[in-house]
Image (cartoon, rainbow, N blue to C red; front, side):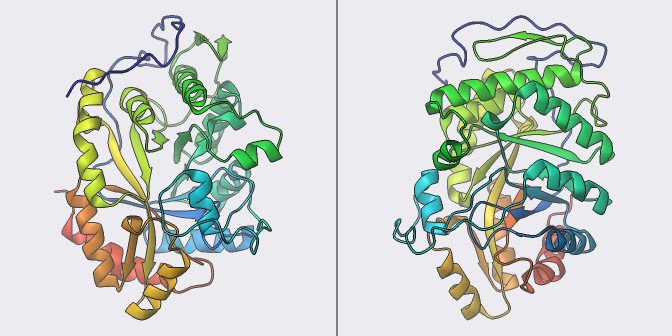
Length: 369
């Protein structure tokens, strides 16, 4: 497969040079991400019912996730919440239902700011990796973000996963006075931002000149704890975002895709990696899925109905055995990195059920020798 594309930038960036910290930016590298199955728990999304709204509950749920041997916890980068149907409408996701719930559920629920909460969780956990799913690139200068992320990686002793996206929530941009350019420009900005972050993390004297951003000697000292740098994930579902991930990220995450669609996308991602001079195996494939586990299949079905706006192909739902079978299909489609969001996770028994009956069965079945 040959990919036809236009450059991300109409003006070439300044050439990179190797720094004292290691890899030259823009050349092929192999991801250091583990090939074992990885199970992450999302503590907050912008969807009502899928966000832990107080730090006390967030700390408690994170502690239980650590006890149950989840691998990571993740937070979204949003300030407002939406009803499920309104979310899929605003995010451009083809789910069931429409925007009828907007009038009845217009009030936003509490949502903790991502970086502040992750910094606190770094002190309140010991093993779990800490991820952003995903940061809206427009909300922070990439150079400042590189410094913030490096600091969190140092504080957490090397547990950061940096997830980045181009942004989509126009209502939120407008509410907080943040410019909302067209999608193509937002992707261009994201591409330049990833380049700046990687250079600041790996070069002693980083410089970059692009259409949207420029840095000249933006030192990142201390650098991140992880070498060559923390994993960079890019979240999104479009062609340009996937080509950017193939060129510049350690992994790509898609929301609410089923195993069939992920398997069908593999050839495109593989070709994009080869065009970028990378081994396709170096790009980890991740999915965000709605996980509804209940010993009572009828209760699981009722919970699914609450979130019917989220595409059904992105649900992992039913009894523990049914959930294992669905995740097995994802693994067979090439996914080994999962970000699960569990409805009402702070008040339901579902997290413990998943940790004791779903994850152990999958780890036994798919253990890497």
